[in-house]
Image (cartoon, rainbow, N blue to C red; front, side):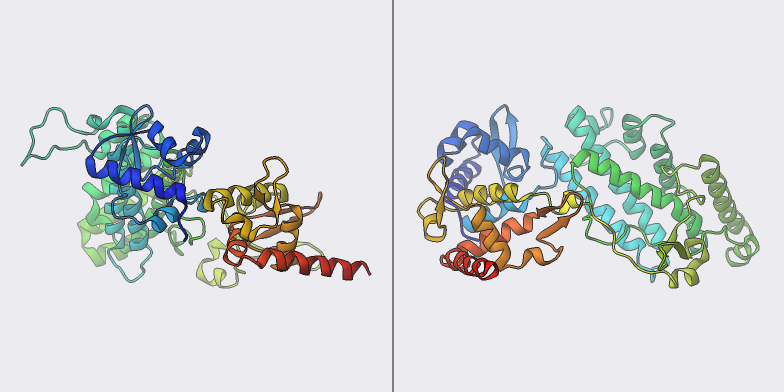
Amino acid sequence: MASVKTHQALLALLQEKEISGAAVTLAEILACTGWKESTYLTYWNKGQLSQFLNETAPNTYAASNVVALDDAAFTGMLSQSKHRRELGHNCRSRLAKALLRKSRDNMLLALELYNRPSLDNRMDAFVLCFCTAWEQLLKAILVERDGEESIFRAATKKKAGIRETISLRACLERNYQKDDLVRRNLERITYYRDQAVHLLMPEIQGPVSRLFQSGVMNYGQAFDAFAKQPFISEARSGLLTMVGDLRTPNHAFLRSRYGEQVGDEVAELAANLTSESESVDDMAFAIPLSVRWTFERRDANGKTLAVASADEGIEGLRKAVVVEKPVEREKTHPHLQRDAIAAINQMLRERYSDDDLPKALVKKDREDGRPAINTRDFQAVAWKLKWKRSNNREHHRSTNPELRHYSDLAVEEFVAKVMEDPDFLRRTRESYAHDQKKRRN
């Protein structure tokens, strides 16, 4: 990606500050870039500067992570068109950011291990990574809320120069009320990790998975609320694999396989969990079995036909029709035409100088006289790239009322097409005008 002059100046300033260890002020940033304070705040509020700047005092920052970057890489990472938010962009503490990243990685590892059917000990691995992820997330929250010292044990001596941090249970006490079902779910899984991991046998995966499913859902909600972004991309597949058999395992079989004492303990664990889940009957603790999942389709008359139900097991699911998860248009295609044009002009001015823009753009803004695209330009490019022929990644047509919406990808693609070939917009406008004239005749 081509670098921007303002980004080059900012990178040079931040590299100088990081090498010297000196603080950088907002005034210095505005002076070197020529930005208005509102422009800077746009970058800052979107979290695009958080990986390079950590606020140490009002309008004063410590620079980091820039020494090894070149101009093009810095511009690419800073580009507003990507809506790129570094994880932990809203955290003041570097420790909180680090804990948040480690928490996400451990939860993803927990999911990956659990979803491997070839691992007989996947439940053991899951509870270890799951509890670690929760502990790191809760400590990140405490650091931001109460300060870094809040997660360290005050009454213990250092061991080999290393301070001890508080336990997961202590984190829960500081973040959730005693009767909170999220805490109750996590305390139960923590118990399995600490005292009962030997009882997590494959035969009880069905009832235990209901607890795990709720735990992961709770984590996702807590992570999103704190980090202001999901811990896993919406484009990825589901979280935990669906367990086909949710029944309590046969007691006699467990005794014959693991011995009387351990077999009894495994059976008791499964029975108690099933009973407690049904008694609580809340998704925050364990997925209720009263929730009925069906896969449906409609006949020629619009009547709903149940193709399969989840309680039919694998044979039932084989009959199911796989459908694509619907995504809200507001998230995928947020721009009306006028908004898309404004976003394109903003991006062009951020990425390119006033010397470069006239080479590719045809018209000027009526208010400030600077090169800009207008409605005619947008319609011509949309016609050239065939966006309006269907609902696609760039364009979405809604009905009642009929409106056309465009995605961030469309904005990005428009800028790339126009600036990569200086004659693209001129040729496209001419072709579009010829096509319109031909249609009228």
